[in-house]
Image (cartoon, rainbow, N blue to C red; front, side, top):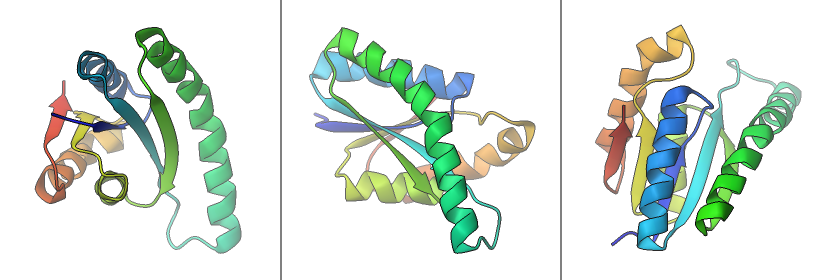
Length: 138
């Protein structure tokens, strides 16, 4: 049914819940997971700022990714991670297409108040533009 599942991840409770649902599904279907975090730089970033933000984001997310890898290993699920840069919805959809993912799983809300307010636009954009099914987890 699904050979590869993408999980949008921002370290929030909703993202963690989305990961847990995707991990359960991947374990049952014997499929792999791709966990994607998106760093959103200030606009317009200079090349130096962009590289510094990406380095910071990779360091920040790597701690969380280590925990996700351990959980996936326990369940026998092949897990890959990546940090992309740009608008979250755009990068989630592009990465899913580029990596041939057949399902996108994401949380309903972001981690900050602003992200919660804006999330409707992120989840709606992913739902609207994704080439594959999207599961939004509460």
